Length: 603
Ligand code: ADP
Image (cartoon, rainbow, N blue to C red; front, side):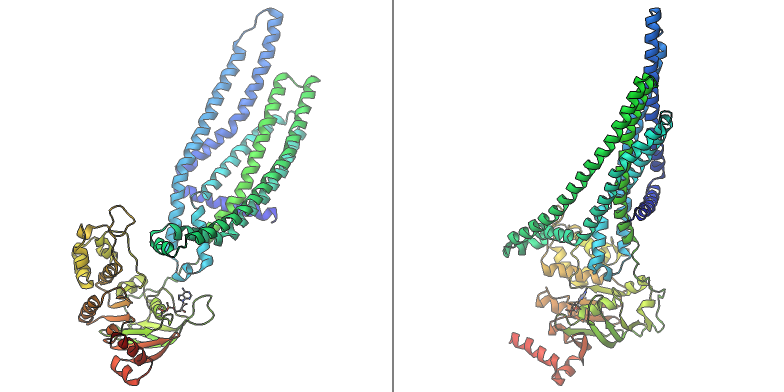
C-alpha cells in the first residue's frame, strides 16, 4: 500500500482516538499531554548538563594543576542540577504510566459501551449475517486495547519527536550532516515495520472466521448447555482434533510473519547501528584533533546514542500506529454500520380496531436465492385467533419475525389497525405485541425477574408477577422453589436452581402475560415441552382471555390448533389451505391428512 494512504489512515484514526480519549476524560488527556511534553524535553537538558559537568571538571583539573586548588561549587552545581533533572524525568515518566493505566480501564469501558449500544440499534438481519458478525467479534476482541495502544503510541511518538528536536538543536552545532546520517540510518527499519504491521492486520482480518470457529469449538467443549450431547455422542476427541488442527494452521501463519518481521527488523536495525557508529567515529576523531572539547564529545555521544534510540522508538511507534489504526478503522467500520430503519411515529392506526392484515406479503432472506414466504394474505380481527400449521421450514417463524418487525417484508405490506407496520413507532408497536418464541430465553435471573423482563415498567412489581404467573401456569412452579419469586434460576450463578424444559416454558409463557397492554399475543410452539394436561389448561385460559385480543399460534398439536377461528396451512412459504378445523377436515386436504396421521397415533 502506498505510504501516503497509510499516513492518511493513521492520521484519521489518531484523530478519532484523541476524540475518544477526550470524551472519556479531558483531565487525563491534558495530564498525559503535559507529562509527555516534560518527558520529551528533559533528556536534552540532562545531556547538556552532562557536557557542562565534564567541561567544568576539565577546567577545575587545569586550575588544580596550576594553582594547587580549585573551587568545587562550579562543578557540583551542575551535578546537582542534573540530579534534579533526572528526578523530574523519573517523575514525569511515572506520571505517564499511572495516567495510562487509568485511561486503559476507562477507555476500555467507553469503547465497550459504544459497541454494545450500537449493537442495540442493529437489525436482526445484520446479526444473522456472518460477515457482519465477524466485524462485531473483531471489534469486541480488540476493543479495550487498540484505542489505548493508539493513544500511548502517539504519545510515545510525540515525546520522542520533542526529544529529537531538542537533540537536533544541540547537535546542529556539531554538524547538520550527522543529523541526517542518523535519520537516514533508521529509515529502513521503519519501512519494514510499516509493511509488516499491514501484513499482520490483513492476516488477522482474513482469519476472523477461523477465529470465530475456534471460539465456537471452545464453547461447545466447555459450556453447560452443550456438554450433555458432547459427552453422550463422544464428540470431544473429534472437536478437540479440529481445534488443534485450526490452531496449528493459525500458529504456522503467525510464526512465519513473526520470523519475517523480526528477521528484517534485525537486518535493517544493523543499518541504523552502522550509521550511529560512523557518527561516533566522526565525533571521536574531531575531539582528538582538538575541534571539540571533552564536554562536547560527551554531549554529542550522548545525543547520538539517545537520538538513535529516540528515532527507532518513534519509528517503531509509527509502525505500530499503523497497525492500531487499521484495527481502529475496523471498530469504526462496525460503529458506522447503518442502523436498522427507524420506523415511523404512529402510536395509533388509521382504522383502530381493524386488527392485523397481511397483504401479499413476501420475504426473502438476504443471501437466499428463493423467497421463504410468498404472497401471504390474511386478516385477523380483534378477538380472533389464528393458527399456523405446516411442516418444519415452511416459514411459520419467519412470518412471526415479520409481524414483530424483526424483519421487514420484501414484498407486500403488513397493516395494524389500518396502518403499515413500518409507519408505527417501534415502542408503540412492541407494547401491543406479547410474544413467546420457540427459542425463548432462560434468563439467569431470579424467578420474579424472569417474569419482570416481559414488561420493564413492572420489572420489580411482585403483584404483576403473581398475576402473570397465574395466567401462564408458572405459579405452581414458583411455589415449589426454595425462595419463591426470589429464587435464582439456572445454574450459571451461585445458588441457582435449574428447571425442567416444561417449567421454563411456563415461566416464558407467563412472561408473555406480563404485557397487559398487548392485544396481539404470539405463541410460537408455546406448549412443545408441556405435558398434555398443562396444555389443555393453558388453552382454556387462553381462550377465556382472548376476548379482545388477537392470538396467533404456531403448534404441531392439533388439540391446540383445532380451536382456532382461522387456520392457515403453510407449505414452502405459501398458504396452501385455510379455514377453520371443521372446514379443513371436510375439504379432505393436507390438513385433514395430517390430522388423521396424528389422531391415529393416539388411537
Ligand atoms: P418454520 O418456523 O416453519 O419451521 P422458518 O420460518 O423458521 O420455518 O424457516 C423457513 C425457511 O427459512 C427455512 O427453509 C430456513 O432455512 C429459512 N431461514 C430461517 N431463518 C433464516 C435466516 N436467518 N436466514 C436465512 N434463511 C433462514
